[in-house]
Image: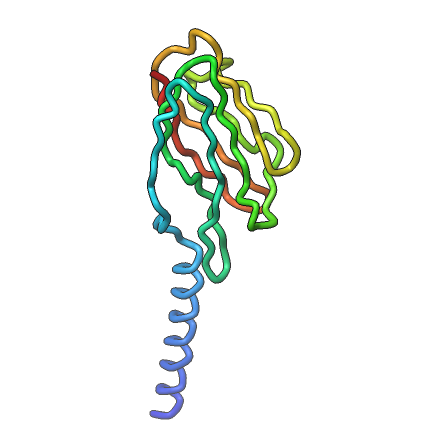
Length: 144
C-alpha cells in the first residue's frame, strides 16, 4: 500500500513540475532592455528584436518609447540576425487618437515605413508589432 501511495505522489509531483515548467517557459516578464529615443527633427529607426526562451519568442522594439514630430518617418526593421518576418499589417498604430496620422507601408517582409503626417496632434500613440507565429506586442510613440 505504501509503495502505491509513494508512486502516486511521485507521479503527481512530476506532472505538477512539468506543468510549471511549460507555463513558466511561456509567460514573459519582459526581460529585455527598456530604452527610448528622442527622434525630434529627424527620421527614427527601430529594430525589432527577440527575447526567446525554450519554447517561445517575444518580439520587442530596441526603443520601446520614441519621441517624434510631424513630417518625419519611423522605419521598423526585423533584426537581420533572425529569420523572423512581419505578418500582414505587421506595424499598425492602434490607439483611437492615431487614425490616419501614421500610415504604414510594408517594405518587403522585414521592413515597415510609417509616415508621421503634418499637423499630427501632440500625444501618446500606441502601435502594434505583429511577427509571423508570435504574439503581438504594443509599445508607444510620443508625438510632440
